[in-house]
Image 1 (tube, one colour):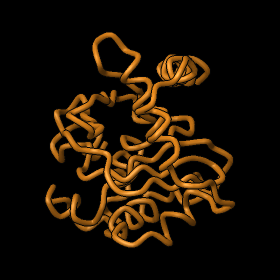
Image 2 (cartoon, one colour; image 1 turned 45 degrees about the vertical axis):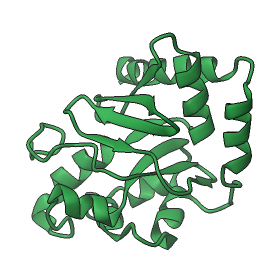
Image 3 (cartoon, one colour; image 1 turned 120 degrees about the vertical axis):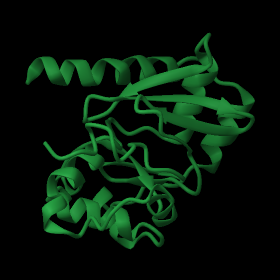
Length: 192
């Protein structure tokens, strides 16, 4: 377990160290636009967010509400209801999809609280213009820029854009994304 946590936290540490360097005007502007922290947990923030009912069903069905109410911190890359519809994702309220719900959720969570400005600053500092983070499902998310947009792609080939207003909760950050970051035919989305 200790080895797994070290593996999961190493990319996060690299990203956070990269984000600690000197700033530029673009990163400073993005920091000014970020949401103000609240005393609500990630679970409460997700429950109160419009357009994220499908993700709420995933969390509930997976039995992971208590995790998103816990200490954290976590960053949840939150697909909207429209993203679930576009991906053709099933009804995650179905009890038989509990394992798939848990796998899908883990593939959208990275350890640590990362704002969009943190991610953008790390991308800007990287010589290749991209940064990778390991998810709780032990998959990689790669972040890069496409013009002003911050793009995210998974090692399964799914690709999306960070969009909307992030929510900084007491135990992490909810980052809206316009795609489901797991393809339905990948192991992270399949039943064990």
